[in-house]
Length: 279
Ligand SMILES: Cc1ncc(COP(=O)(O)O)c(C=O)c1O
Image 1 (cartoon, rainbow, N blue to C red):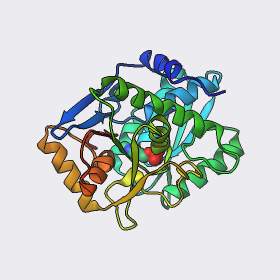
Image 2 (image 1 turned 60 degrees about the horizontal axis):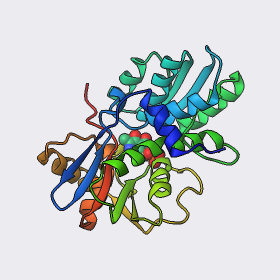
Image 3 (image 1 turned 90 degrees about the vertical axis):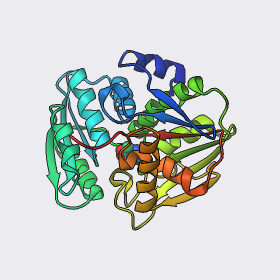
């Protein structure tokens, strides 16, 4: 049974403090996840909630595939919960992201090919070895864990709502697999115009947003507008944030990129989902 947003927030209070909400000129509000539980990205919210609900015995092996942040979140949550963790990552992925996962004590498996190939390899090995797969990708009958991950993300929107000085007219969320955008959609639907920013087919910079196949069915209805973001849009957004004293990584600036591209007027909310990706 889905748990209430309040219960999920209470759970996350035991993991760490709320993150900041910045106010920029023009009533632009930016929820900044770059400091979330000291991990540089919001993803730990999903991993921690999902793993806590699964109630796995200590020593259970948990497997996941990642472009970076989700794997780090799962590895960190496993370490805190006394679980073993194996993380599959495409060989060409950002080495800073890989090192950050390793530092959480996870075993890394490098997969030749792209992110989708790493997911396929992880699923096959998890099935063969009886590991628990904690993947942020809803497909076929693999729905329960992605659903828990989406529930976990609700904390950041609930916090933002409490911190906002006024209701937003527009909420811009960016997407890779679509779980984060789904959490935003569920929170704000009927109360704000929802815009989803997705990487343009030729984009490479927002490396954590690039997937062949997003989660199924999450954003089929309720999205008011879509916008494609290019590498130039992302660079522009990172620079715009830097000009306002905010440091963001490329995958973290997708919502702001969409907001700037469309010239959205406030009151509007976007989320900086990760800080800079540097050692
Ligand atoms: C920093 C960052 N922002 C946004 C996203 C997109 O989240 P989702 O894959 O749930 O759409 C990701 C996914 O990895 C991410 O790492």
